[in-house]
Image (cartoon, rainbow, N blue to C red; front, side):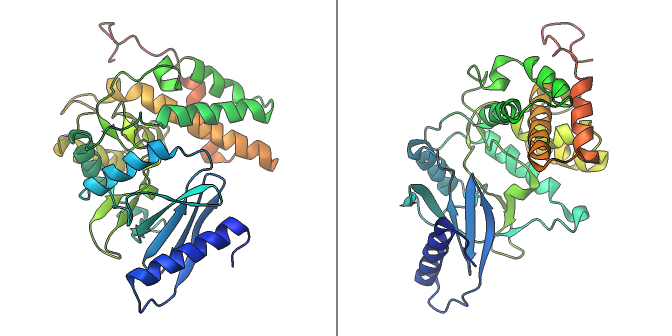
Length: 311
């Protein structure tokens, strides 16, 4: 049952929108997410999303336009422009079946790699703002600093200061033309039509132009931390390369291109984990410790102009 006015209003909007699409709606409803940065509800085959309170409509509209014009990459929205509910921007989407978290062997790494490659090869169909990945990483670090002192935060903050300014959201990215998702992980893929249609990307909130290696950085970081099996990383990277992705060379060592974004995503994830642990008054778990340890092992970022920088 709805627990606050926004959720209740969004549920009502989703129901009304679903009934315009399917008069014989079976009226199945569910809350898919209810976080400070997003509330998402489903009614039958319609999904309604209330975006973060600080979402800029001038940035969201071209992101929606891009998803509409790239239906072979993104799940297209049901409406090309957002509506407003209690000061929050709301968008409507068809329902897509998500990745099954209980079946890791069926994770669609090949589909993720191929979709990213297709996205990175495609010119922006409309002018886009910068991809928001570095800005989100900077916010995670800022929240960690605000959360209070904790010894484990030292290596995370030190690793952050070693990153180049663009990766910290403090300077323009070196690529301002490649279209990037901005927040790629397996939760950003769904099958549409559900349950066994083709895989498509969802969540356009961070979509924009920027460094395409950022979209490969989260699985790269988990692989480097020992949290993603080598065979799954290889499946993802191979699919991306075979589909002509531009973020890494077609063969050879991909790490010179991935190093800085992977470091940034490791720091971001570790910062979020520490902030949640502080808020919950608990110790870090094994996965969270692995992220902090990875930050502690990070030395200076290699100089790309040095002869041995790829070593």
